Image (cartoon, rainbow, N blue to C red):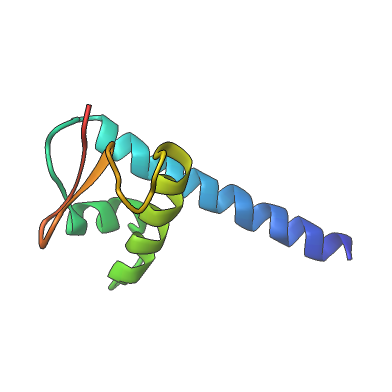
Length: 88
């Protein structure tokens, strides 16, 4: 079962690394909208057609870590139909 635990730990590490990369992309230029396509391209560079639902899932996980109320975000703002920005 060590192999299973190792795999689970690896998955957590990869997920946290992506969350950090997502936050870093937003923080590099706060208050500027980062398009959904740009985020997907940077987070999954080797993927032919990344799924937006993957990005939404990671955004939700990130918001759970940085927002007091992830359902009503103050820091990571959705710009409908465009992308996201970090509000400072």
